[in-house]
Image 1 (cartoon, rainbow, N blue to C red):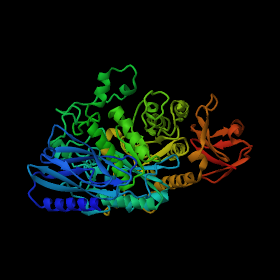
Image 2: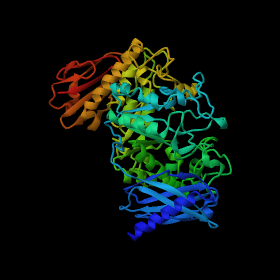
Image 3: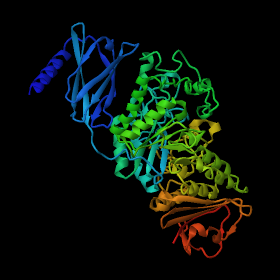
Image 4: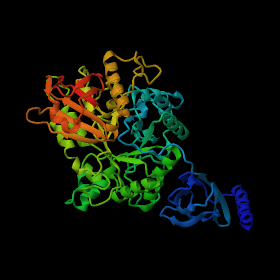
Length: 614
């Protein structure tokens, strides 16, 4: 009772004080709120206000203790570390700041942690669909202009107006297609146009706790995720902790002298990510990679600063708990400090054991995966992106119709899987927002398209498809990134063509769409593909351009045959009895044709069979 009366009197006095003259003013508090019941009891709160560090800070809240306060070079910042016990209840922590006999209060909200859908992670049972939100669909024209920057759909590098509402409007389309997981390019605020830099793509963040207003509000983002979860689908959030945007709010008043690498001005990164894993590399080359700026508009953050490291780790946990995202794709993973990355991945997975983070690395891929066989240090990174396989696919599945595929290239990449600690958690893909699209302009022969998609959707790992692949969207890297990220036809009300509908697609597009849909919907039902092991056969001297492999889970078996020749291939199933076992027949999942596995098979030129064995 005494504690209650004391706490009540303090709260009452703070309310009264808050209406009196202010010695200081708080401009920002991050994270904006937190939760009780988190596994990690520590919370860092960053207060930013006029000379806030000069004030004396006090509070009284049952179950919450002050661990430490840290003042930095800039008196406008104060970092407060709290310990939140298991007994702490939801409510408002009233922080009292006093200076020169003048005081003011700030009420910080602690919310009750709720067990809801989300934080599920993603796995080989999923198929990720990558969307650049600005280019997919404009569902809310009221947010098109923010901060006086109009949209301009005629300019490939300007904003086009796509948003969260547009994605919500087409979730049924994606669900029907067979997509299980949506990955959006960054959705945090990117207020960059005043600096002469267009960041429609989202990779120059100016506020880590706010959604990009041109896409919608934080609440709109949460609504999108709720609608995704309603359909049994998942959401992956793109995060960037290597750099921020040059117009981030803190850039005009940085907290510390070492908040950024090369804080005095732009020094470009070497982009030599090999140096991180190179046992012979001098420290100077590692520093040149990790401490340089990606581009001048993206200042490089110094994650070796422990205050910044804690800030970034908490930011990702805040988004997981607040928006209930299911996974993270981390941009430019090797460019950030290694020890920070390891600490961050571990912290996230300690809090959310089912969660999954995929890191973008273009080289030394097995070195980055957790429990690596070739790295003595622990990365704690669950999933990596298989750029090696993507390059092999681009080289193998040539758009030249009269040239044989070199399927041996793909075999050689898969045959090196002994380097990986976990072959299930490898992201496989044909293209993305940084690469030339797999589909080429004026391409009319769909054999290449069908064979490549059949491969990435039946091989090991977690497949990812870039938006518009299902309607044969094309674009070349050499023409500029903006043309890799064209608007989805039908996503804007004034579009003359609506490719979200069957009637709005050409016959060729419908053939591609229907093929992919059938493949994706079947994949959901195949335990062999989503959970099974992979056994493959080397293309031999007689069938150098034929690649055969099986996916096996208990009694569920799938045999995949890729004919890389520009001619029909006759194949004897006897060679593959080690995986086919006693099966006498099987059903090809696209054509639904029944094949006799005791007889020879005729594989069409550049054809693919996906045979579910009886």
